[in-house]
Image 1 (cartoon, rainbow, N blue to C red):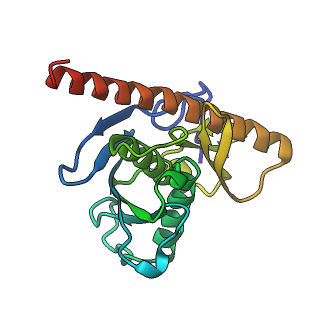
Image 2: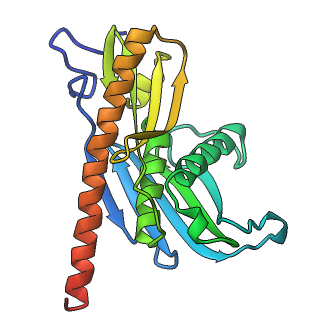
Length: 241
């Protein structure tokens, strides 16, 4: 199948290094301490954060830092498949762990010892790049909850199809079975907090694809900062600042 036309366009009309449109909104869940909806093209994710609060299971209590817990799930209607896997399947457990590890890299857990922070992420619409969208949504929700962070984590994926590096794969491109690199970074600190790859790539091509995904992360970081800034301005207006 041809994923890049002779004119250099992808199936959805984007150029190889073009990202899907990003939309984000804070405060979507009223009862949560912090929440966000994040969309990348047709992929739509909601995240809610509760905490820092008292540790529910005393055996998990950490004296020197906060306990971070994460739960990932997909809404039954998020894909076209009639058969959805039950909650708690291996993929959900793995993605929960990936999100938690990415978030632990940015949360200043040492400032909140003997407490816990719960992050809930649900995919409402799935069209490729759900893992990255979940990390971006969780970052925004943590910022909305006012949880101290070194910096916001942003994530993006890139792939390699028809001998062309492609940024931000959609579902059709993702399902093609080609190499797919998902990167999560702390943009200002220039630190990688997540790197996952499906299938193998020669080193020179891997570096190109990884660089593309990193540039995507930095572009997303810029968008997320603008969303947070706009939200702060709105709060100031509401409070008559």
